[in-house]
Image 1: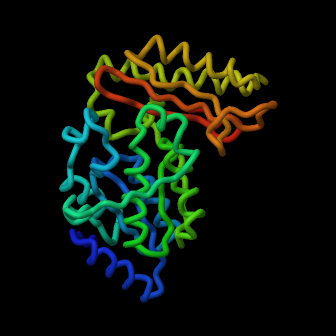
Image 2 (image 1 turned 60 degrees about the horizontal axis):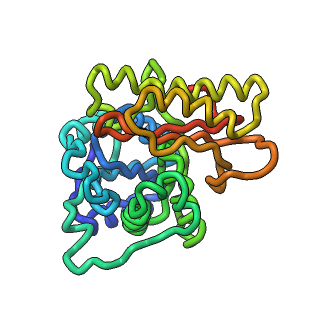
Amino acid sequence: MTTLVRKPADFRQACDDARAASRRVGLVPTMGALHDGHFSLIDEAKKRADFVAVTIFVNPLQFAPGEDLDRYPRTLEDDLAGCRERGVDLVFAPEPGSMYPAQFQTRVSVGAITKPLEGGFRPTHFDGVTTVVTKLFNLAGPCAAMFGRKDYQQWRILSRMAEDLDMPIEVVGCAIVREPDGLALSSRNRYLSASERKRALGLVSGLRRACDAWLAGERNPDALRSLVAERVQSSFDRVDYVAAVDPETLVASEGTPTRLLIAVAAHMATTRLIDNVVLGEDPRP
C-alpha cells in the first residue's frame, strides 16, 4: 500500500519509522509527470532498499524567470497510480509553502562543478537543485537516493555535495532510459509536436556518431564533439552547448581520454532537451 503524505514532518517520521523497523530507505526525488525513466529509478531503489519513498515536487527555486515553471506538467493522480502499481511505500508531495515558508532565506551552493555546461546557461539552477535536495536528504535521513544520469551534471553535483558535507546518503546514478528510437525519456518530451519529435532524433543521432567513431579508435575530443554538433545544429532551432569533457571534472582535460562525456543541450521551439553519453563507459544510445 502506498501512503501519501503532504507535510515534511510526516515524511521525516515515516522514514524514521522505517529505519526503526530495520528497513533501509530508498529515495527517488522527482518533479512528477512520472514516466518509465522515473519508474526505472523506483526499480533500482527496490533493489537497494526495502522501503521506497518517492518525492513529487515541482521545485520553484530551480526555475529562472521565463523558464517553464508554470507549464511544467503536474499529474499527481497519475503519478500516484504509477507508484502504487510499482509497490512504492511512501509518496511525499508537499505544497511549496511547506518547503519554503515566508521567511526562508537559505541556499546551498556547490562550487566549480556547477559552472560549466548547464551552469553557463542556467546560472541559478543548481543552487535551487542543491537546496531542495539538501532539504529532502535531511527529511529522509540515511538512505540510498536514485538520480537519472540523463541529468549527468546534476548527479555529479549531488554526489559531490553529499561527500563534501558528510551526508549519510548513497547517491546512485542510474542509466538513461530511452524510447525505442533512442530519444531519452523526459517529462518535457510531451511538449513536442509530431514533427518536432521527429527532428529531436538529431540529438541521439549525433551521439551515435560519436559512439561509432570512438569504437573505431577516434580519441580527439574536438573531432568527437564536432560529429555530434553537426547533427544537433542541423536538427534543432538553437543549441546551448555540445561539449566533450572529462566525466569527473566536467571540463576539458589534456591528453588522450580513456572516458569522455559528450553532453548536449538544445532547443526545439520552446522546449529544451538535454542528453549525454560517456564514451568508453556507456552503451551506444
